[in-house]
Length: 426
Image (tube, rainbow, N blue to C red; front, side):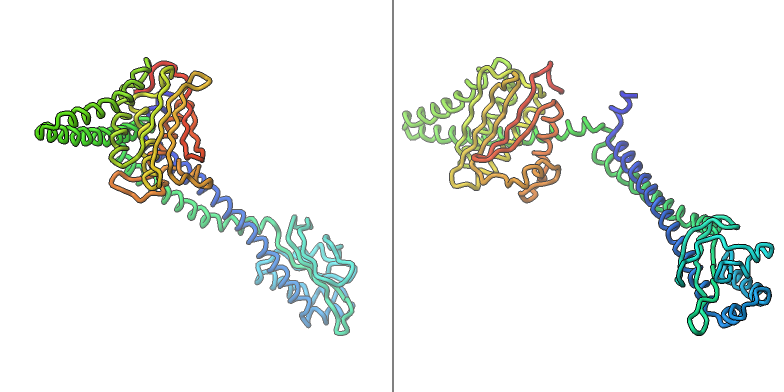
């Protein structure tokens, strides 16, 4: 099972993540719609009982029947009247009663004359509540009936049982399920489209291999630029030396060639002094030295001979070192004093500390986390794209258990790598 998870393609993982997200969002939407429908149904029941009770309490027929004080006559007059309203208003009951709560009307004729089950306010006022009566739990509103001189002559209560409210809610569920199903279907379609797009870019590679492919591309790009600059610089020096020899100025030609050899040899000595050094990184640093000279940047390198082996593969090492140096050169190129310094030394835990500093303006504190986000860049996009380098650096370093941090004065990217446990990943 673990092996299957490790080899699952990036496209499949994107599809699964989006599908799970879609289902979770659909479930949350369904729960919200059900809760909202329940609240709306309950509120609708309260409005219906309140309107019906108030209408009956102000009806001249009800006021006249209660003012007479004859309970039997009031029942005979009001029972058929309120039952018609119950049916028309889709209520479960309407109860008219005396001031003391004796029923004059009720859906069950046998309960007429009994006591009203519910709260009767101590003063003439409207009250809506949920109470369990003879028909079960119900939402009910009780309203006072006042005579022409505002004297209390009785009460009217209208109610809807919670069972009826639940039935109303159930009738609305198909709409809720339809909306949820539509959202899930659209989300699934989006996940499938995202999977196809991801597969076109990454094929069937798992995430680790996709990152390795990006690292390989970045390594080749930065190494190629460095070697191009080195080739260009040596070509210029050789052309100059040949021209001087043709002019008979042998001493000057020898001086140019000697200076070129001396500058390269200084860095070569530092690289080869490390018994565990990576020749690919050494070649990168040599090339970057030429690139720095092309751009008018003072190039400083210090490599401690006792630096231990790197836990990174050559490809990952070039991606990390190259991207940090490229970033530093871009920053230093806009400064008055242009310099870039690379330091590679052992850490206290026998790991490696890589520090790349520059004379640039620095990184604002509010951007020190965002610069490591994939796609974020303060520079305009070019043919190679922007916003990949630092994100890739952090991904590679964290992948082996290291850390990356940014400091100021001067601006420095400090990479701390743990001790190597065998050779890095290829």
